[in-house]
Image (cartoon, rainbow, N blue to C red; front, side):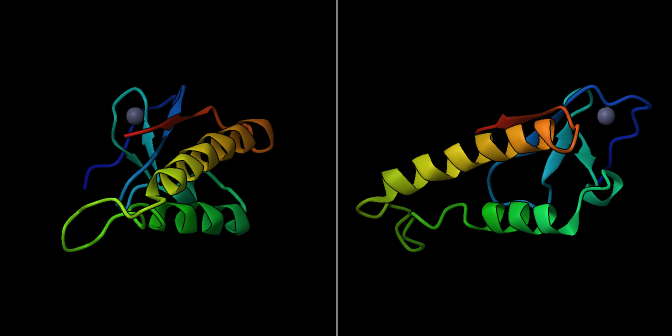
Length: 100
Ligand SMILES: [Zn+2]
C-alpha cells in the first residue's frame, strides 16, 4: 500500500467503509498512517470502532439492509461528520468526512 508523501497536507479525508485506512490525503488520495498524526490513542480507538461498525446494517448473505438499517446508516454518517469536527476543533487536523 502506498502512503502519502506530501510535504504539506492541506486536508485529510476521514474514510467511511471497510478499510484498513482511516485517513487519506486530499491532495494525493493516498493513505495517511494514523500514527503519524499524533492523535491520542482514545480518539484513534473510537475512530477504529466507528469504522468497524460500517455495514452492520447489511445482511451478510443477501446484502439487503435490515429493517431499521436506514437509521443505523444515518447515525454512522452523523458520527463520521461529528468526528471530523472534533478532529478539526480539538486536534487541529483539517479533516473532512468522505461519505461513500
Ligand atoms: Zn498526500
